[in-house]
Amino acid sequence: EAGVAQSPRYKIIEKRQSVAFWCNPISGHATLYWYQQILGQGPKLLIQFQNNGVVDDSQLPKDRFSAERLKGVDSTLKIQPAKLEDSAVYLCASSWERDSYNEQFFGPGTRLTVL
Amino acid sequence: GNSVTQMEGPVTLSEEAFLTINCTYTATGYPSLFWYVQYPGEGLQLLLKATKADDKGSNKGFEATYRKETTSFHLEKGSVQVSDSAVYFCALSDQSGGYQKVTFGTGTKLQVIP
Image (cartoon, rainbow over all chains, first blue to last red; front, top):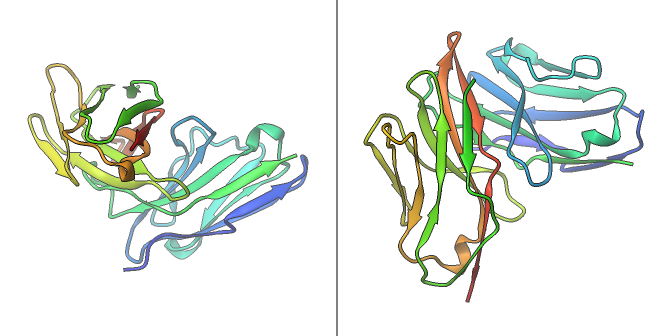
């Protein structure tokens, strides 16, 4: 079974520029997550989709971050404009349905550096 | 809200030493508990899980028991190998508002030396 795909793997931009990340979850997984992982910290949930609807975006900085999930499959996360503190690894994960015992499957992440 | 507290790293052990990484949690409901591992240059992957009190999760020689009375889920391995060097994350998941809500700890870096 193919895993969670993310692109790009690395991105370097200057502050105030915009950037977009793409994620393709495992086929059939209804739930998709975007996390921000700052160096030395655990993943922090930015947004969670159930199919193509948002169920939790309470920690998403909505003035600069946006995300969508197209037709309940692929998803994109955008930052506009980027700040220095956005430098982090952005992880996408997916899981079956919404039960609490379901494990999450993670992609390799996108490492963003904002200069 | 929910929270997960892990022992701070890095933890440095010699090969074949015994490993314990402490994890305690705070949750209002009845969460499932997980250990994820992140090997250098790779994404997070599930190591083991337990879904109810007194359950023991195990995989690759690692074990953790869901202790509701002490709200803990400590990770143990009897004899570590160099290949176990990685960052280990404790996490909990529960149902909140009809969907799965996951909370991660800050991670514990393990370095095993030959």
